[in-house]
Image 1 (tube, rainbow, N blue to C red):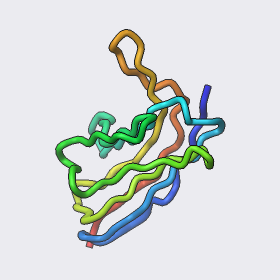
Image 2 (cartoon, rainbow, N blue to C red):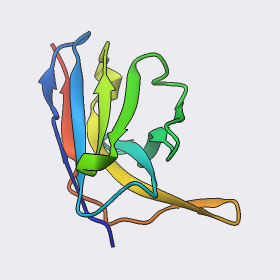
Image 3 (cartoon, rainbow, N blue to C red):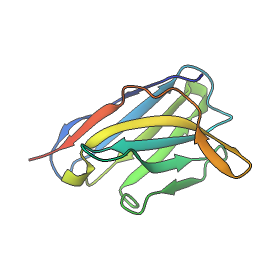
Length: 120
């Protein structure tokens, strides 16, 4: 099972930026890669996906502020976040996705995530 280590989080002021990294234990080239976040007291939500061909999709709440990218040679995915808002405070996780018969499922082990805190 693919394992992930997320990094790059921190405490930032509203309007700030961060770049999160997701290092995988093996090649990610055959997987779509996804970023999720889980705010305190809320369920984990999918915020960004980058497919094997490079196309991307985003949750409406982050469009225009989040940019997902990948470097297959480094087995790493990234999430660039701009214009951070207090509502973005959450633990961010990544995972690999596989779609079988129309159903998309995370297939890796969940890492510890990286904490993003937006506060003045």
